[in-house]
Length: 142
Ligand SMILES: [Zn+2]
Image (tube, rainbow, N blue to C red; front, side, top):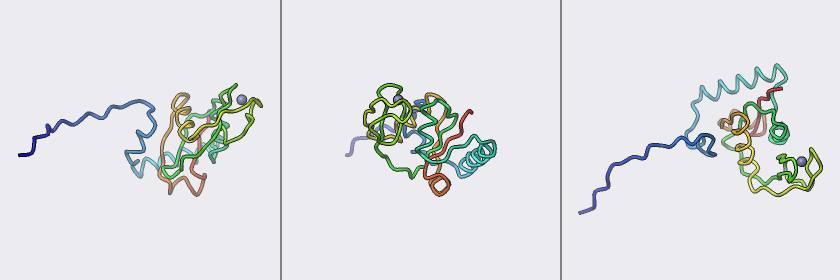
C-alpha cells in the first residue's frame, strides 16, 4: 500500500520583488494590454524608454518607475560598476563614471532586482514587447 501523502499545499509565499515570482504566473492578456497602454501614454509624455541598454542607464540613474521585461528576454551577461553601481551591457569601463566594472552573469536579473528596489517591475508577454522594444522597456519618473 502506498503511503498516503498528506494533501498539504504550501501557501505560496509572496516574497516581494523575488525574481521569477511573476514569471511563473502568466500575466492576463488584459493586464499586458493595460501596461502597454501605460507605456504608450508615457511615450507621449516623453517618459518611456525602449530597449534594454537605455533602460539599464535609466535604472542606474534611479529614474525608473516601472521596468517592463519580456517573458522571452534571454539571460545575458552585463557589467556592474564597482564605484557608482551602474548597470550596463558588458563593458570594461562604467559608461557613467568611467570606473572599472565587474562582470554580471545575468544583467536581466540584476536589472529586475534594481527595479524592484527603486520602483516596480512587471513581466510582459514577449509578443507585446519584443518587436517594439527589443524585450525591455521602462517608464521613467522624469
Ligand atoms: Zn560608475
